[in-house]
Length: 302
Image (tube, rainbow, N blue to C red; front, top):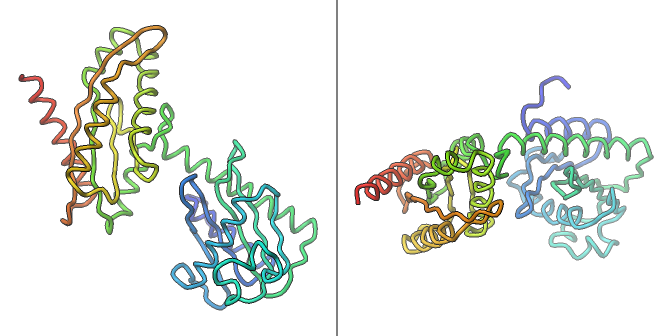
């Protein structure tokens, strides 16, 4: 490889560049799956090299779902019009007869985390060497996915970390968010009274309650220490945001049981939203942080 692999996109570029020369196929695409949604990160077609926004992109999504939902190490369909799994897919007839090969990409726990797929205008007859090569590429991509996931998740709670949030701020300039900044009240006293191991167990339970209180599409981040940030996409109505914030505050007020001890805590929550304005996600996080700080100060003065 002539350049270093710094991201999953770099890895996908290397995979596609290798496959289009090694197998001489028409179309190659690489996709990832996080358990809630799939994302095609790189795609190549000899007649239309940049197909990310082309009609072929829709066909790719349909074929990818087949690979994610099967357990065989490789899905090999010689003729997409003759196989019931693909003949009924949208656009299949428009695309015409193709050979399709899909290799699932699995994480360490064997959960599907993506796929490498090939479409070719004539039947593909892959020998054991070529099949082994494809399997090795899938294993390489799975390894890179695990490394990337580890770099953007908090090691204690498994939530996203600030590195991921920084990436989101850079890549979400065209999206509107609502943001909650959550600070656990008097968490230092918990650590001082019961020890840091106890505090870590409490943070784990808090994270679990936060997960339960939001949608799978919402982005939950451990911002640092006892601070959490939630980014809501398509949750702009102030009534909805206040309702969710109230639900989260109530869930945290419920008693926690840790190592035979029962503890009660509370949280301060600051909220900010674009509401159709041009505020960036980074500015929204800062505004929500300031709102949370103001609420905390007011509560102390009561």
